[in-house]
Length: 633
Image 1 (cartoon, rainbow, N blue to C red):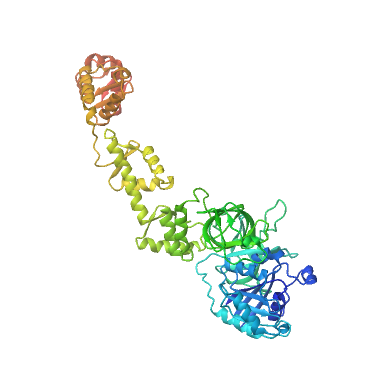
Image 2: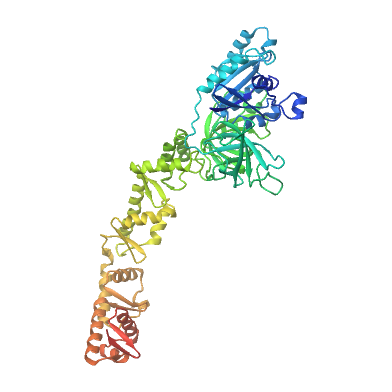
């Protein structure tokens, strides 16, 4: 099994010396580090214990280099917390403990170093236990060691090996991610990046995406523990030789520390919804850990190996005091690609103290309406489901109603194939539906189809004289109820297959019958009487229909086929029109092909009526025009 172990602790408590005693390798590689005896950058080596391959990250302890420390401990399986017996608990010890807690690292071993210069080790252990009461590591094993004499080193190795056997990587079905902590280009090799691999294993030839610059690259070569490898398992320190990805230069995007390699498909974002936590213990000498974190305060986000300026928006309050937890939104100055469940640390804008930390719940968030109880309720339900692919998909469906089939969860930590399997099972269990390119929750779909139908039924009740509800009006009503354009077609198809029909650019229920409101019946009767009296000499329309009530009645009479609209300027009673067409047929049958003038004189119609009448009969294939004459078909 492969695991990552990282050091933590105050400056000069012997972290690098302890790593050298464990592995035989010095991790301080920079000349300045060797000269000053202070770790500035991350150091890397490895340790073989029984069947375990353990990559080791040695982090800086000095306050000036805490930013580098944060980027080194984000993917640890085990933290080796180093405390010097001659110095005991110090301010940087406390800050490193905060950082480990915020990043959710629970497997911690305390190495009490420099016991060779301590007169009463038992007393120091007792004092250290008292200091740690109420912390996440109050019950952590404490192993007294001396890097100088070798005392306790074997016991520490045994403790590491024992703890390693209890760790299980829950990487099944998860995407591969690697936060870049070093980038270099050996002569003749090309770009090489290093980092800790999380999620699924990777192999040469695999394609990864470099985020947030969205540049694809393929793995040319993998190195682990200074040896070539045909695969890299999760939980391992790896070096990747990448094809088609250069090192970032001025004006030219490329790989650099702080970027992330992962499977394609993630979205980049500048807005993150998070659960934010502040520990109640203060870091001595850091006023930032004592004061309240203010709404809209500027901070530095540490995510993976990235370090980005951000502004904190608190959901339900104006300040967050030590010891409190709340939902918040981080609005970033630069884009990132984060996954649901990723952990982070916040430091103050001057980077003098660690303020808070937490977990990302929505990596592609909307800033609109964040400070609402509704958003808090959604995030509260999400907290408990982020590590379970089935529960996470159900949450997305319950929250959003429908999701894209090929991209159902934005920036999910799970592979698309894993989500596809979960979705298919939910569909087979009738807990979700597949509708076109979407997956919908059962409840949302049933409620949505009913709501879409209710809009039409309400329209029928309010407009009984209208045969259909215009589709544009129906879609507009759906939008007002929060239904996006994407699903209008799905709902339309569902309705037309279950008691509704589309016609005349509208939609209606099959049982809808045209009705005229009682208060308009007398007006409609008068229109019919006047048109009956007019016969084939219809009134001038703009003078005849001179009120909104008359206009409404006329529309009803036309749609109910009591009145025929020959043209925009000519209307007749339907029975008058039918009689006129019958007269035309009888005249031609008796006299043969006839001109328009012959027909007009025969039936007594004006030209305003005759021309559209004959064109209508042509369109109905009753008559056919042949030059100036018309024949029967």
